[in-house]
Image 1 (cartoon, rainbow, N blue to C red):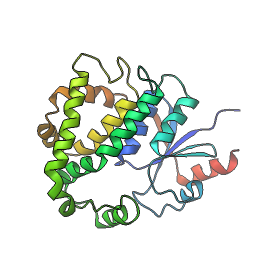
Image 2: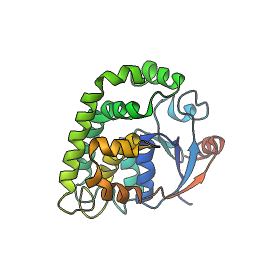
Image 3: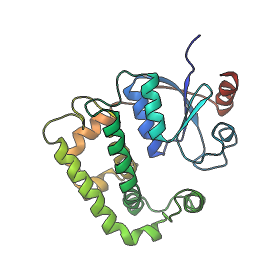
Image 4: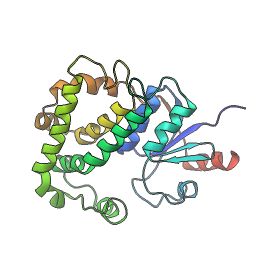
Length: 238
């Protein structure tokens, strides 16, 4: 019997989904790609997740993994090579990633909003009322922009220094989960036409080689899949 297909429920503009897409690329995996709405309702995903709101969600047969800090270890267990944890090991890589994301997430959003302006009002209401519990609209975030920019610049300065010894990735010669955790925050801020402005603000020229190397991991071999087909696959699996 063949192994259950890996399925990722995600939307294109989700930075955490980009983190997982790159992990799938690092491992060169074939996977089903289910495009979902940016916010609930998601009537064909809710039966699998019990109403979990965040994105992405990984499905392997009838097993459902929510949150990237559960998804990446699951991928590592199912497909150990190439490893997501070269050089640093899983405990240190996951600890660094978790702390970084929790510390800088809102600051990165603040920098993004400064350059991008407001997202659609229903999306902002959803994130404020049912997800982040913080108003991430431009007017609410902009007064804190200098502080957010300073915090993010301190982080990117440290990252540039860490890579200045000639290593290709944070853990050494091979990319891993800790690179993806750092990269997806930059991916959020630099998206669309913002890259030039963000690069100038943060002085990212020393990081361009690393940014290109992480991006070149790609997304593996995704195949479009309907939400109905994913639900059927879970129903038919053990």
